Length: 524
View 1: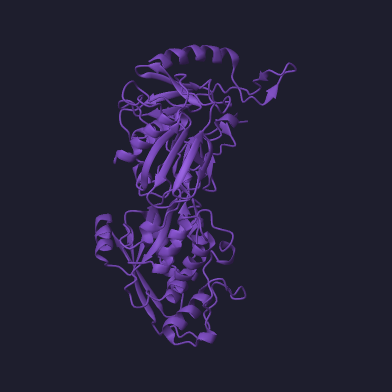
View 2: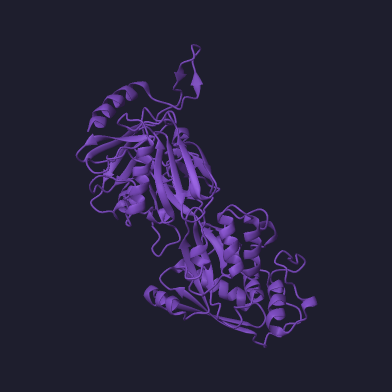
């Protein structure tokens, strides 16, 4: 491949010059590289299995490698906004979007980025059901290149947040069918042959020059699941490793961890055919008694952000008035109103009205602990110890409400899933990976793939549709807080592990472990 020879020549020049971040200039105005280059070993896993196609690759270790080599039109930031990368500007009304590409982007091969490359990459995701990006294109009606630098997308259903889904990596059209790597535009480029490869700075990168980490050794793995053992031996220096999982990694040694926000939502699903759970006041009561902050501090080991609403981060318009701590007194008042015959004038029904004068552990007034108002079964997958611990803590908090009796039912995953599908539950502990636009339709739409409990009113579905058009997003938040069709618990945090002492102030983005590589500095 021609770009390999070109890359080798650029590598020789780059090693002689010690590339940098273009922060300083000499008196003559020329760019000066004043960033010290790290000579520490840095290894990255690669499961070599044919041409690395960033749109179709599913192996987790190669997904991380793709983050170093390829870029999308946008990158999702820590606040779940879309930041332009290969896109210079765009317009969109929620249904029709027009994207104008940057004019200074070149592939490693030297070819300029064109609209045809973007169309080819997006269509690869659109038409290949095995692509990890396929679901994002489900509502794309058409993609076309209007000119060399302009792409138009028309959706079959409005989504004003489409740019948040367009961090799909772009490769040069036609380059994903042969060789070792599809041609990319990222900060690093592969250099080598056979089983001996390095990642070196992309000298034509539109983002400038890289920081201290200029040379990365690619560690070829015999199996896609061998990255952790290679990390433990020190061959691999950086990888993603889920913390809240069935079998969390035991990395040990001199290791640093970096957390990223994610769209992985932990929540409680509810049976809306249950006589009590069909009442939003009961759902409000159960939500009020959830110890969300405590769950994040204990069961989730600080690798989660508490959430009352299914939005990450929590919106300031409501999140500040909805407590993340258990409020048993308020929960008991709501429950009495719904099930115990309390007068409406005596009940607290406003989700924004929290009685700060009542301690979380204070017994609810005028509540007979022997009068059972609500009995529930909480279903959880027994194979995940983090979820079991969370479910037990939730049940204990609910049982602290006078008149509530909750038992935890732990089941193997296959049995758990079968019970969800048959509706054999009152409440279940759920986890789902939302898309970056935080689309709620799988959970609340009629026939939604995760709507096991039949939740979501017509008003809520209309509010979701309006928010996707860009209309009254705050109104959706308010309505969700009133109806609580399911009970959000927390958004899990992603975890990236790296060898200690490699990078100062490492700050990855939610879907990009190499975000900010131009600012990386040698750890002091």
